Length: 283
Image (cartoon, rainbow, N blue to C red; front, side):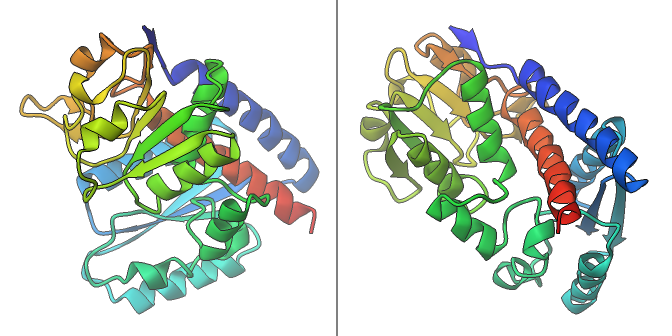
């Protein structure tokens, strides 16, 4: 059984980003710049935001976080995002999720300009991904594809099952695997007899958002298992959607939690940011 560790893959991506950022600075006399908008004080969001900023700085990029209280009127946040859109020194913009309940996601999706949308949430970028056109790739699904590539797991001709249909992971994951010539089974909370479907899969991507949902009864022997889940168990330790110890006895390869998918998400965010800077430079 192979542990699909993110560290060597993420480091390779980040080394490339650092080289490109240094070259960008030589050309433009400024660093690529990532702006993060944080609303409220969700502990996990604050940690993620700090981690993104720290990573950007180590990769020779500028970073700033614009913070708002949880009870802010969404229109004020929208104005701030529009100012970032208009700022020529800002290359990438990310609105940290989750947002407070008074924000309408179907509106927020449009706030960030597509050319600065390093999360790849804007409908224009989502549409390009669906059509197979060049565009930003959502960070977590793109990170999973890089993991598979690094460990020489070719999805072509494989039966890939995705559990979860979010616009952040599930839906773009299906598109990327389909573009890589996998055959797709797409499951969700309303899928009956889930275990009978998942047990067919050569590649199983679990983004269900339910800790420990997948035990060995869901997994075919020799399958590749990608766990996108991130939770705190009763002991306060990080755990995924997959019961790692039990499933690892069957899987040919599996991502641990932590150390699997999570670091890849930040690595791809940095890759998207330098790409955004380079694309805007050429306009």
